[in-house]
Image (cartoon, rainbow, N blue to C red):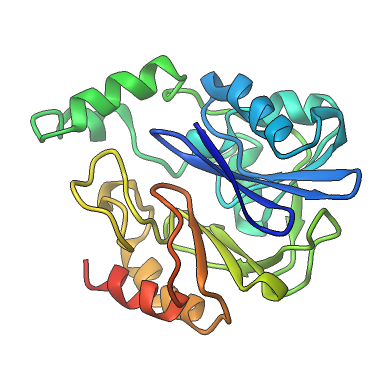
Length: 243
Protein backbone atom coordinates (compact mmCIF):
# COMPACT_ATOMS: atom_id res chain seq x y z
CA UNK A 1 0.00 0.00 0.00
CA UNK A 2 1.14 3.51 -0.84
CA UNK A 3 -0.17 6.42 1.25
CA UNK A 4 0.65 9.87 -0.11
CA UNK A 5 -0.39 13.37 0.93
CA UNK A 6 -1.49 14.78 -2.42
CA UNK A 7 -2.81 18.10 -1.04
CA UNK A 8 -3.04 19.70 2.39
CA UNK A 9 -4.73 17.13 4.63
CA UNK A 10 -5.80 14.91 1.71
CA UNK A 11 -4.07 11.52 1.69
CA UNK A 12 -4.41 9.00 -1.13
CA UNK A 13 -4.17 5.32 -0.15
CA UNK A 14 -3.48 3.08 -3.14
CA UNK A 15 -3.49 -0.72 -3.05
CA UNK A 16 -3.20 -3.34 -5.77
CA UNK A 17 -6.97 -3.70 -6.06
CA UNK A 18 -8.65 -0.47 -4.86
CA UNK A 19 -8.00 3.00 -3.44
CA UNK A 20 -9.45 5.17 -0.70
CA UNK A 21 -8.79 8.65 0.73
CA UNK A 22 -7.99 9.82 4.26
CA UNK A 23 -8.92 13.38 5.23
CA UNK A 24 -7.22 15.07 8.19
CA UNK A 25 -7.92 18.51 9.60
CA UNK A 26 -6.60 19.27 13.07
CA UNK A 27 -7.84 16.55 15.41
CA UNK A 28 -10.60 15.53 12.97
CA UNK A 29 -10.37 12.78 10.37
CA UNK A 30 -12.65 11.17 7.80
CA UNK A 31 -12.46 8.51 5.12
CA UNK A 32 -13.70 8.49 1.56
CA UNK A 33 -14.34 4.78 0.93
CA UNK A 34 -12.69 2.01 2.93
CA UNK A 35 -11.53 -0.90 0.77
CA UNK A 36 -12.53 -4.57 0.91
CA UNK A 37 -13.53 -6.31 4.18
CA UNK A 38 -10.13 -8.01 4.25
CA UNK A 39 -8.33 -4.64 4.10
CA UNK A 40 -9.47 -3.33 7.48
CA UNK A 41 -5.93 -3.41 8.87
CA UNK A 42 -4.67 -1.46 5.85
CA UNK A 43 -7.38 1.18 6.34
CA UNK A 44 -6.28 1.63 9.94
CA UNK A 45 -2.63 1.80 8.89
CA UNK A 46 -3.44 4.44 6.26
CA UNK A 47 -5.07 6.62 8.92
CA UNK A 48 -1.96 6.29 11.07
CA UNK A 49 0.32 7.18 8.17
CA UNK A 50 -1.82 10.27 7.60
CA UNK A 51 -0.95 11.35 11.15
CA UNK A 52 -4.26 10.49 12.78
CA UNK A 53 -5.94 7.63 14.63
CA UNK A 54 -9.09 5.61 14.08
CA UNK A 55 -10.76 7.10 17.15
CA UNK A 56 -10.58 10.49 15.41
CA UNK A 57 -12.39 9.26 12.30
CA UNK A 58 -15.81 10.89 12.58
CA UNK A 59 -17.25 10.05 9.16
CA UNK A 60 -17.05 7.56 6.33
CA UNK A 61 -18.02 9.21 3.06
CA UNK A 62 -18.84 6.75 0.27
CA UNK A 63 -18.59 7.18 -3.47
CA UNK A 64 -20.83 4.13 -3.88
CA UNK A 65 -21.97 0.83 -2.42
CA UNK A 66 -19.66 -1.83 -3.84
CA UNK A 67 -17.84 -4.18 -1.51
CA UNK A 68 -14.38 -2.90 -2.51
CA UNK A 69 -15.39 0.54 -1.20
CA UNK A 70 -17.47 -0.44 1.86
CA UNK A 71 -15.47 -3.22 3.49
CA UNK A 72 -14.90 -1.54 6.88
CA UNK A 73 -18.28 0.21 6.88
CA UNK A 74 -20.14 -2.03 9.36
CA UNK A 75 -17.31 -1.92 11.90
CA UNK A 76 -16.99 1.85 11.59
CA UNK A 77 -20.75 2.37 11.91
CA UNK A 78 -20.80 0.14 15.01
CA UNK A 79 -18.30 2.54 16.59
CA UNK A 80 -20.57 5.50 15.96
CA UNK A 81 -18.88 6.76 12.78
CA UNK A 82 -21.37 8.54 10.50
CA UNK A 83 -21.77 6.95 7.06
CA UNK A 84 -22.63 9.39 4.26
CA UNK A 85 -23.54 8.67 0.63
CA UNK A 86 -25.72 9.79 -2.25
CA UNK A 87 -29.46 9.53 -1.49
CA UNK A 88 -30.06 6.87 -4.17
CA UNK A 89 -27.30 4.75 -2.64
CA UNK A 90 -28.94 4.45 0.79
CA UNK A 91 -31.28 1.52 -0.03
CA UNK A 92 -28.27 -0.49 -1.13
CA UNK A 93 -26.30 0.42 1.98
CA UNK A 94 -29.25 -0.85 4.04
CA UNK A 95 -29.24 -4.12 2.09
CA UNK A 96 -32.57 -3.50 0.35
CA UNK A 97 -31.17 -3.64 -3.19
CA UNK A 98 -27.96 -4.71 -4.93
CA UNK A 99 -26.38 -3.03 -7.94
CA UNK A 100 -23.10 -4.84 -8.40
CA UNK A 101 -21.50 -7.46 -10.59
CA UNK A 102 -22.48 -11.00 -9.64
CA UNK A 103 -20.38 -14.14 -9.30
CA UNK A 104 -21.89 -15.29 -12.59
CA UNK A 105 -20.76 -12.05 -14.30
CA UNK A 106 -17.21 -12.89 -13.25
CA UNK A 107 -17.35 -16.60 -14.10
CA UNK A 108 -18.52 -16.08 -17.68
CA UNK A 109 -15.47 -13.83 -18.18
CA UNK A 110 -12.97 -16.11 -16.44
CA UNK A 111 -11.38 -17.01 -19.81
CA UNK A 112 -10.28 -13.41 -20.32
CA UNK A 113 -6.71 -12.37 -19.39
CA UNK A 114 -6.37 -11.11 -15.79
CA UNK A 115 -9.89 -12.03 -14.68
CA UNK A 116 -9.14 -15.29 -12.84
CA UNK A 117 -6.17 -13.87 -10.92
CA UNK A 118 -8.20 -10.82 -9.95
CA UNK A 119 -11.17 -12.96 -8.90
CA UNK A 120 -9.02 -15.13 -6.65
CA UNK A 121 -7.42 -12.05 -5.09
CA UNK A 122 -10.68 -10.34 -4.24
CA UNK A 123 -12.22 -13.60 -2.98
CA UNK A 124 -9.51 -13.70 -0.30
CA UNK A 125 -10.43 -10.10 0.61
CA UNK A 126 -14.13 -10.80 1.04
CA UNK A 127 -15.20 -9.77 -2.45
CA UNK A 128 -18.44 -11.78 -2.38
CA UNK A 129 -19.81 -10.00 0.68
CA UNK A 130 -22.45 -7.26 0.74
CA UNK A 131 -21.75 -5.10 3.81
CA UNK A 132 -24.81 -3.29 5.15
CA UNK A 133 -25.74 -0.84 7.90
CA UNK A 134 -29.03 0.43 9.29
CA UNK A 135 -28.75 4.23 9.30
CA UNK A 136 -26.70 5.76 6.48
CA UNK A 137 -27.12 9.49 5.87
CA UNK A 138 -27.75 11.20 2.54
CA UNK A 139 -25.49 13.93 1.19
CA UNK A 140 -26.81 16.91 -0.78
CA UNK A 141 -25.05 17.48 -4.11
CA UNK A 142 -23.23 20.81 -4.15
CA UNK A 143 -23.32 21.34 -0.37
CA UNK A 144 -19.96 20.97 1.44
CA UNK A 145 -19.99 18.23 4.04
CA UNK A 146 -19.37 19.01 7.69
CA UNK A 147 -16.42 16.65 7.92
CA UNK A 148 -12.65 17.13 7.69
CA UNK A 149 -11.62 19.14 4.59
CA UNK A 150 -15.30 19.80 3.63
CA UNK A 151 -15.62 17.76 0.41
CA UNK A 152 -18.40 18.85 -1.95
CA UNK A 153 -20.60 15.99 -3.27
CA UNK A 154 -21.07 15.77 -7.05
CA UNK A 155 -23.83 13.41 -8.22
CA UNK A 156 -22.54 10.99 -10.90
CA UNK A 157 -25.12 8.22 -11.33
CA UNK A 158 -24.50 5.33 -13.67
CA UNK A 159 -21.88 3.10 -12.11
CA UNK A 160 -24.52 2.81 -9.38
CA UNK A 161 -27.72 4.81 -9.01
CA UNK A 162 -26.30 7.06 -6.30
CA UNK A 163 -22.63 7.15 -7.25
CA UNK A 164 -21.06 10.39 -6.02
CA UNK A 165 -17.75 12.14 -6.66
CA UNK A 166 -16.23 14.60 -4.17
CA UNK A 167 -14.64 17.94 -5.04
CA UNK A 168 -12.19 19.97 -2.99
CA UNK A 169 -12.35 23.38 -4.72
CA UNK A 170 -9.55 25.08 -2.76
CA UNK A 171 -7.11 22.26 -3.55
CA UNK A 172 -8.43 21.66 -7.10
CA UNK A 173 -8.83 17.97 -6.23
CA UNK A 174 -11.62 15.60 -7.23
CA UNK A 175 -12.25 12.07 -5.96
CA UNK A 176 -13.93 10.20 -8.83
CA UNK A 177 -14.69 6.79 -7.34
CA UNK A 178 -15.43 4.31 -10.13
CA UNK A 179 -17.09 6.77 -12.50
CA UNK A 180 -13.63 7.50 -13.89
CA UNK A 181 -10.52 5.47 -13.11
CA UNK A 182 -6.88 5.55 -14.21
CA UNK A 183 -6.24 1.81 -14.11
CA UNK A 184 -7.72 -1.47 -12.91
CA UNK A 185 -6.64 -5.03 -12.28
CA UNK A 186 -8.54 -6.05 -15.43
CA UNK A 187 -7.06 -3.29 -17.60
CA UNK A 188 -3.75 -3.51 -19.45
CA UNK A 189 -3.28 0.26 -19.63
CA UNK A 190 -3.02 3.22 -17.27
CA UNK A 191 -4.56 6.62 -17.78
CA UNK A 192 -8.09 8.04 -17.55
CA UNK A 193 -10.56 5.36 -18.63
CA UNK A 194 -13.92 3.78 -18.03
CA UNK A 195 -13.93 0.73 -15.82
CA UNK A 196 -15.01 -2.55 -17.48
CA UNK A 197 -18.66 -2.22 -18.50
CA UNK A 198 -19.98 -5.25 -16.61
CA UNK A 199 -19.31 -3.39 -13.35
CA UNK A 200 -21.75 -0.60 -14.25
CA UNK A 201 -25.41 -0.59 -13.32
CA UNK A 202 -26.25 1.78 -16.22
CA UNK A 203 -23.39 2.52 -18.62
CA UNK A 204 -25.41 4.87 -20.81
CA UNK A 205 -26.39 6.98 -17.82
CA UNK A 206 -22.80 7.16 -16.64
CA UNK A 207 -21.58 8.36 -20.02
CA UNK A 208 -24.33 10.97 -20.08
CA UNK A 209 -23.44 12.35 -16.64
CA UNK A 210 -19.63 12.29 -16.87
CA UNK A 211 -19.52 15.65 -18.70
CA UNK A 212 -20.86 17.21 -15.47
CA UNK A 213 -17.57 16.19 -13.88
CA UNK A 214 -15.65 17.98 -16.62
CA UNK A 215 -17.10 21.32 -15.50
CA UNK A 216 -15.27 21.24 -12.17
CA UNK A 217 -12.19 23.33 -11.48
CA UNK A 218 -9.76 20.52 -10.71
CA UNK A 219 -6.47 19.22 -12.02
CA UNK A 220 -5.69 16.47 -9.50
CA UNK A 221 -7.77 13.32 -9.97
CA UNK A 222 -8.02 10.69 -7.23
CA UNK A 223 -9.71 7.58 -8.72
CA UNK A 224 -11.14 4.50 -7.07
CA UNK A 225 -8.68 2.39 -9.06
CA UNK A 226 -5.32 3.30 -10.55
CA UNK A 227 -2.78 6.03 -9.76
CA UNK A 228 -3.31 9.72 -9.10
CA UNK A 229 -3.65 11.72 -12.32
CA UNK A 230 -2.22 15.23 -12.58
CA UNK A 231 -4.25 16.72 -15.42
CA UNK A 232 -7.36 18.87 -15.89
CA UNK A 233 -10.48 16.90 -15.08
CA UNK A 234 -12.06 17.94 -18.39
CA UNK A 235 -9.20 16.23 -20.24
CA UNK A 236 -9.50 13.15 -18.03
CA UNK A 237 -13.23 12.92 -18.79
CA UNK A 238 -12.61 13.27 -22.53
CA UNK A 239 -10.04 10.45 -22.44
CA UNK A 240 -12.33 8.22 -20.39
CA UNK A 241 -15.23 8.74 -22.79
CA UNK A 242 -12.96 7.68 -25.65
CA UNK A 243 -12.30 4.27 -24.04
